[in-house]
Length: 518
Image (cartoon, rainbow, N blue to C red; front, side, top):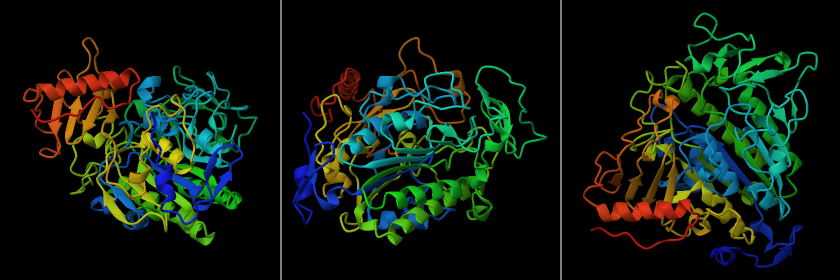
């Protein structure tokens, strides 16, 4: 049974009146229907902000959110890769339930249009919803015609406006999609995209590319950079990576300005700091870490610009901001951009082992900040939080009753997000190429099932995957770097964690008893 914190939130508000929303739901009046902005950064590690200990780069705009809001130290993306995390954020459901994995650029829409989603939920109480930036959740229903109406997509799962990178920066198609149509498309130069055949496209080589990329990222040369997948045509519509900060920021400005008088939800999904890292020229050299560090500076600038607009429109005190990342950090991810060579003493994952793709803490433990001027008191929280919990927590804030089959894996952690309680989740699931489970200081990583092998593309990644054929158990209070596997010393805890994972797989998100030291 779901437990709501909406009664709790009423106690901190000055008005206890209620309004009847267009969808018929009852919710508190006034600031209990704030604007909501989720800043969703790509591949930003736990240690990649100066407020989280970064070295070699400064992030003053995000740091102000952290200084004046709640800075969480044990909050997690739902998965260690992008598509699964985005799926969970928007559905309140673990991605493995839909076999969600990193998608090719021409994949069909991953979220079923009948599924209850975060934007659909907000629509019930009168919100206008926008998504701007990286999508990577699929579009259409297969064999997309990029020269016509691209549907279904974000508008079919609850958004009212979308301006997208259809997949991500290292994949074709390298065009903007506004609502249903490719922006600036010349119908006399149609787009053709394929992920399974050669279209005669120009490929990236060491001679013609701005920097060297691996074979996978060299299939099509766009803006002097290799990309995954084959694409020809549509040249007038091709993006320039260096223009991302201005293009996306202007689209956010327009959306906020158009909806300033009514509650809105903006899912602002950064491309930064994903590869290829091609920051605008005014950010080049602003860090000590080359393109990756400069992309972090660029991300911080964009965040600051949007917050400044909120201030100028008088919306800051009526806007709840959640700032976080889709997974942990990665340095070398297919392009030779000196991310490793120029790292210095910076630790992208902070003190935690692993990063993107990994089952270790660095794979999902990410920056997570909540800010709401006048409503959230500044502080630091150790509460155990998952991004999958955002949906149920916002529902609680708005007085929306979720049915048992809606946001099924999302827990109402509103008091923790508002900084009024140190309590977070009892159990936290971490998804990567396998599942891991947290409870208090204990971290269990399951082995791959017999007969299941690591995927070839994953083996090629220069990341710390660790052992994959044995159960692993770590006590993070004593071993935060997950260096000592104590599974053999605590077989009872291993068994209980294994049983809990099995119950989660079967659809149960309820506690099955406490785990104690043996």
